[in-house]
Length: 395
Image (cartoon, rainbow, N blue to C red; front, top):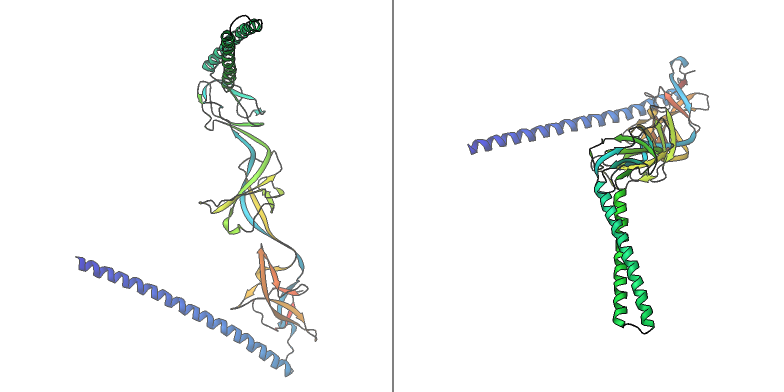
């Protein structure tokens, strides 16, 4: 049994290795074929150019204009160029409050607002059962009044004993005893006053108030239910709005605080120009990106969680040569385009320009070298051109 299993495993391994080797062989053959075609293209273009030069020297270079390759051209010019990172985000409110009780919560006795109501900061939203807290408050007040009476009485006794002591009547022990009693009662009075403050604060926690001005978005509590603040009441203030998005970590060195952002609202056809005010300092594990925030003006048509399109400007140049990206061609070692040049004899020919590229955005790509502006770029009919080929422009 073990021997058979070993033989089967060996056979599977050999088949797998053979399949992998075969795949590598096919890939190598295709790469070799591609290299041959590229070399043939380069050689053919060189031979065509050589034959054209020879024909021209022998006086046979005149070509019927109707047979010339038809092209379209456009002038190359330097202009401002910007690159953007296109992302999707959402609208969010700066002030969203999830109301919670100041104490431990409790049974709801009264509700004063409903969903959709406008509320002010500090406005009472609902009232909780306060029977026990009110009893504690009343008991603390009664205790305070009792101690105030006792302190007043002990102070009077101390004053009398002190006057007698000054006249040489009575003993020092009596004076010290009266003073000690008065001070002890005063300390109890101070503690009672603090206890009344605590009881008063506890009593006030039965009134649940709004932390912000805004609209009651959620009111998920009824009279008689227990209010604990687990997302039961939500207040939204839309007077200050922002957009929030997640930027892939690829752009971590290109997006920072102050970066210009164009915000588009697809549903309302609105556009805002703003800057990034917040850049998150951590990379989220799930989306592998960091959070950004940018403020936008308040608008009745905008709602929290509404979808927006962000164009983050991560590159800007005041003067760059750009060309349509579809005019770009390449060989085994270079990127190039064809431009039209006028010869001394008045003929128009195609000239290949090797270029170095920069940023690209939309259908435009930045040219760092190879074109300086003023050239006539061939934008149509360039696919089968070769160096020095005589052409004519589509009128």
